[in-house]
Image (tube, rainbow, N blue to C red):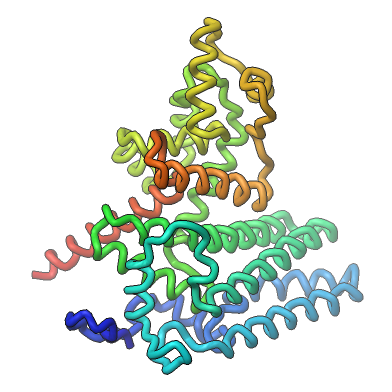
Amino acid sequence: MITNSSGAGKDFTPIDISHFYDDDTKVERNESQNGIVILTPKQKNLVDELLVRMREVDAERVDIITERIKDLEHLAASVARFPSLLERHDLAGGIRTPQSLIDSLIQHQDEGDTTLQLPSKAILGKGFLVAKIHTFSSLSKQSKRIKAPDRLTQDFQMETITMMFSILAEDVYLNLIRDDSQPMEFRRQWALSLLLLWEYRNDQTIESAAPVLQTVWTARRRLAPAFGTMMGTSELLLISIQMDEQWIQFIKQKLGENGVSQAMEEFLFGISFEQIQELRSILKTKGISAIGRDEVSSFLGEHVKTDAGLDYRDFYSLYTVRRDNARARERMNLPGPHKTLEDYFIQYITEKNKEKQDHDSFAEY
């Protein structure tokens, strides 16, 4: 239960944590080791199918894979020994409750790395998730090696990518929580989502957003935009055609905002806002209408990695560059996007979910 212990003199209605889960997530919680989801039902089915196929062509490797899964179970059990973030505890530093953690996340506005500010369980759980990501990446390669159906290999890859987005989601939630221009209701909701992510290493919002962002990333790479006007209009239209309704509505409603459009350009072109501005000026001065990706470095006079593969590590690496640049601009009050495209998209999803909840509640009367 979440109760008030902040001492701020405000009363909060106790909320059952299970209220924030749908039926499917409750099932997944039953599959967990004292909280952390080791394997979701879908992931367990994938591993079981791979092992069945592996026994027919490489029986010795079955034991290796089985031991690796056991290692994940041991890691999860170790993390679970630390106090739950969703319960009240009398710790060495004093009483800690979910509400006090939420208050701390909202009130903490110091700059710099927050690693030493976060609960031990959050840090350890992230290590577990990284190990799980590497495990599933390895399993996808094994699936391909034994010539398992493409469907199985692709499912392993998608699970790996979705887990990578869960790590990314931590950064996104922390960025949004610290944005005091956002409604307090949203900031508390993001803080609670972060606690749930830390506790179970599973997040419903990012599970729905991950396939969309992954499709955008894949389409972005295939399109190989020409760096001309640097507006990316044609590329964006081609990407949007391939997307679901949620992404299309995000583009329609939010692209007119400077921050969103600038963050979108950084995502599409793979270079920073500052580099985009410089390149745009150079092309205009030289009277050049368009150049290709492989020419960007020579025009800017520095090595720039404008393209990346479909590997989940490439996606996360380039995301962290955009994230750090955005944070630096905000800290120094510089022009350009102060959030990443992922920040804006998760914020949009939250806004739409709130509108739907309000509409559903109104419809009941």
